[in-house]
Length: 94
Image 1 (spheres, rainbow, N blue to C red):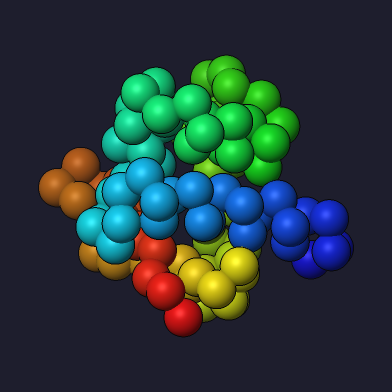
Image 2 (cartoon, helix red, strand yellow; image 1 turned 30 degrees about the horizontal axis):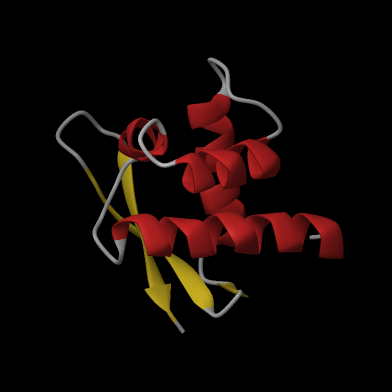
């Protein structure tokens, strides 16, 4: 992962933690939360490149890519899938 990409990923991970703490979420739920939180929305757009129909998929790919890595003092952890099969994630302080 490039230093630039790592910085963008770290920024979104830190904003997720600030917005929702360490609760489990799906990417769809996080996108909904971003509709109410301008800083979170801006971090997601910066990390995924746009806010469009593919944002949820790109955000999930980002989570998969950084899973377990420490970014900006936080770590992304994969949880179980929800009842619809969507992967649940959470951000923990490292």
